[in-house]
Length: 295
Image (cartoon, rainbow, N blue to C red):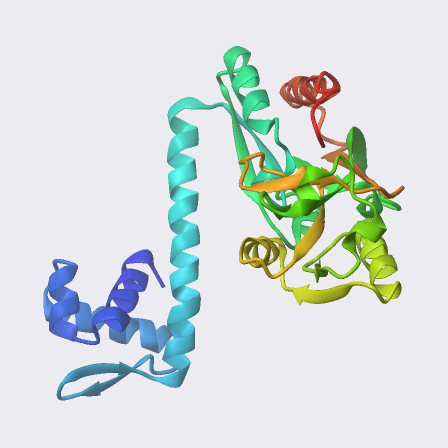
């Protein structure tokens, strides 16, 4: 299977017409049909039904094309990254995190680092799930994580970055936003969005509030869904400060509790590059100087 056959297959699944697909890809129909047939011979099952009107995906073909499309997109990104890298850079540092706002000072750290290290590319990667497994496989050089995830790990170096606290997120016109700090009793009679992949410290607070019997709750699939529900007036939520994008759309009010999140960076012990050390120094310095910054 080659990239040309992949592109032919994807285009035919889109048009379901051999003539139109061949025309769109600027090849003759016999050549196009021959390549599709070769692909089907290689995979060992028919991808398309042929009929007088054109083509139709078989059940197996439909599933195959879905995977093929995803694979082609990944390949496209890999080629683009390779082109970017070969044109300017001699080295690359990949930083993995679950969401963009997790490392608020990352863009500033990247700018400062690239001023003195223009030959090193910094590549952010976002993996809401599976980030730790990918890092341990060597797919990333730096991983943003919480201390709960780093116990009993070997072959890694742990870099403490900052402590993040728990905040109430509410619409800016909510009466709760007039308070400087939110207590448990302030939430009595309210609907609290819970779940959505909450880390252990946050789950403990949520369960404690629910156990009071004075708070309604609503299960939410993930953080973005939770924020959508909050924006729609369906309730409020508690979240780690490191998820705050500081866009001003919502009010973030400190919540009175002992729980917090110890945010860390992981690197591989075998990775002793000076460029990696320099970048970590810049990022940690930005956080150490942000004393009054809400986290």
